[in-house]
Length: 283
Image (spheres, rainbow, N blue to C red):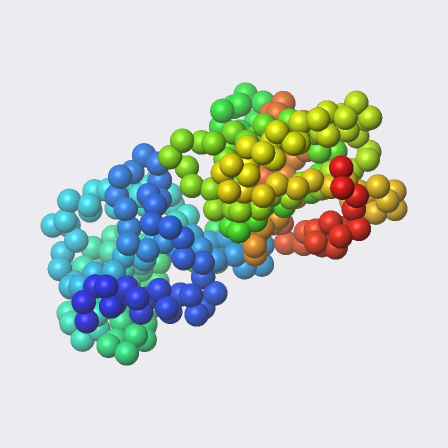
């Protein structure tokens, strides 16, 4: 079984078990080493990342120039799960010993595509909690952390904030226009409310059409509505970024822009955005 066939079977295994197969991108901006497969799963409000490295043989990894980079990966990203996959029926030494040094997991794959774990990764695969801080002293880092939330969105990005202001357009537009950056959404919906001041509502109405036109040029459909029902507004407190199988609790747009203390974190129980959208008013 060659590496391509082995990789297909590994991908099938993880997809069947509810994992999202990410694009083949570097797992850390400062590291050039690029693993064959990266997977992500969100369960019970927790997100887990793992790198799956498919090998055709169990030869010493230390003979490979990527070994030092792998050490750096484990050091830089201690909460990242890393697994090797090699064909069954062949000796596992010395690879197993070397992987044990770093606490990296190892799977064997049979010819019929069945994976069996030999050694577990030292990082529990479902226990990586995503939470990124916002700090008034780290304005650039704040922007990076917000972009990480946006980057976790696939298919669509829905933003619910009853105090949404026009500054949110700029945050989204800058993210969509980042160089060498792939935006994995084709739809952005913004759900604000009539609670903002009349002057801000006018600004939203004025700035949304050119914002929408720019995103349409990028192949992204943008829409905005506002909630006017006071009873519904009273039931909402937090702000959310919602996407396919992923939701984040975030700060108000004004707090993100000012860099006020807070955190961006995975949300277990977001409100029903689609239902709120259906009963809201076009701006």
